[in-house]
Image 1 (cartoon, rainbow over the protein chains, first blue to last red):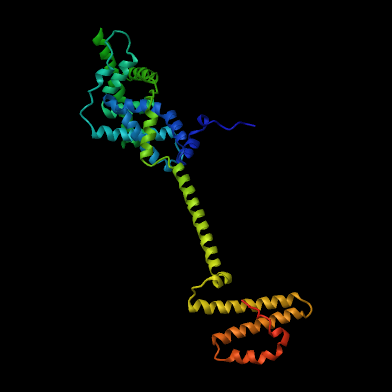
Image 2 (image 1 turned 120 degrees about the horizontal axis):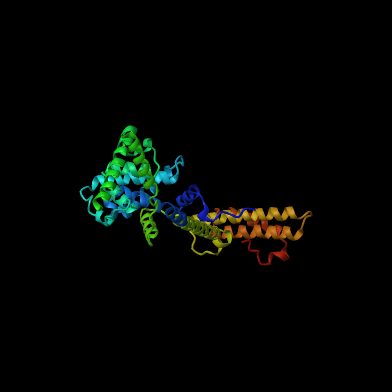
Length: 183
Length: 171
């Protein structure tokens, strides 16, 4: 006889049902399962304002929990949650504005002639214009399709593709510039 | 140019693919989120359960109090309880009289049903109870002299030796 599943082995759907029944432990498991990835995604989407990520993660979960009764399981829970996070981030960036370069220095790496490091890449990503940054993060890192990105941003699929192309070009220039400046 | 772009694109994509996908949670991050959700009204299942328990307890208490009050009310209005009370209203006394008379008739009927043969002691008890009742009504003057005439009419039926006996008090 198969032993009953331990709570940490429960799939998202079961944890969600338990959470909706008021089970705090189920929520904690759900949160600890999905937040590390959500947090990193939102941090990248925020760019230079990544210090706001903790508030944004909480806002995302709160909005998600409030709308959880409407979650039908058509998409993966992580995708559904990330979509909420993207919308929250867009609102956040639209409201704030003006502080984009405040924390870029935190990401700065000492210039070197060696190939660009991950820190260089993170810094170049954070310096991208908001729309380009969101498209490249969602497409090239999170695996969203252009159709999904278009829905998220309220733009056409073709616009998403063009934005991605510009974003990669900008990244390439930024990374090359970093290397050539160092040498 | 296009070829170079594609090459560069795949290089950039390769670099992006190697970026870490997760960020560590702060030590108390989950607790803070749980607290925020609690403030927002989540995790009320236990509260709901205790609310159910309170409602069940209240229902049980109401039932108990109702049962107690009902039995007390029934006892208070029982024949024995009414007979033992001194301060009755006129309406209560009329009701008591009716109920006692009905009880007497039912008891007599029950007794008659239980005995297959004529029981001389039962006859005597019945007639003396009736006589006692008639005397009581006559003394109280409740029936404008009817019971006095009845007792007079019934007097010869009682044997002289038994007439001196104390009357059976029917109540």
